[in-house]
Length: 321
Image (cartoon, rainbow, N blue to C red; front, side, top):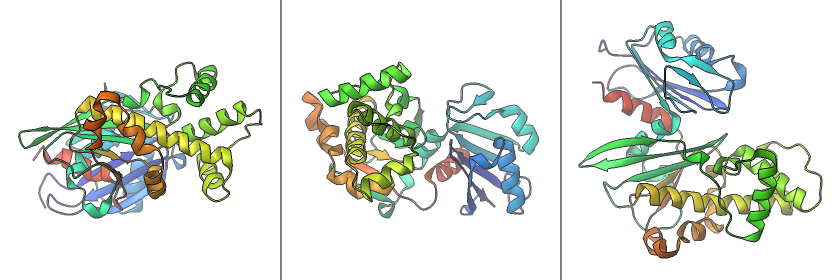
């Protein structure tokens, strides 16, 4: 085993913490585990629990994707009350290298390695090789990232595209925005394109219809829509699909993602076949003079068994070798 191994990999969102282990430089990912973040007081507790539960020794290196911007030594999660210091965590883990990045930057690193069986295509033609890639993912929040092609090399682009302003294109969407503006002020894409966003959409539709909103979890909206055919829940999903198409095409245009736009996160893979029948693709292509440009760009829903961000974190660490 190299002195640079083993490696600890992590993909930590607002809801779940996912970990994997790499025993040596050429070994596959092993000990892949997922834990609810609610079970822990912080990131360090989750890591220590994983290492103890899997009877793993101290790692030599670690790479973590976290669901928040990483702009300084102190990291605060956007949708969870966790904070940590990168330097302090590195010292506690005793690693020679600790790489901390946005979770969608980590996922972006994995895109070139995804296999056809791990992707579900929604429209477009075959992707152009060695062209820029876009990534968007509704989950507990809305992640956005990209991968820029540069003469055979890849460069990740990490940003906070989930917090761009949401735009209405018809009367109903404008009514929804007005409802959400009363509650949030600024209405970002994440306010509708996320698990909590589905609840926001459902509640806004209820308010417009003059009905009580109730208290729902994101999974309740899916159950109401697809198991019970509840009209407002179905309409919430239709709005979700339309706005996802619009925002995904914004990502494609911004990045020049002629290699394709990938959809990750925990929501869309559950409904990928329904998405293909929704207004998602028509809204993706509905960009006036650039509709023909977008019509060619394929969209892929990621449904990989191994969390892609863990594979991407490994690829990011490979740069150090």
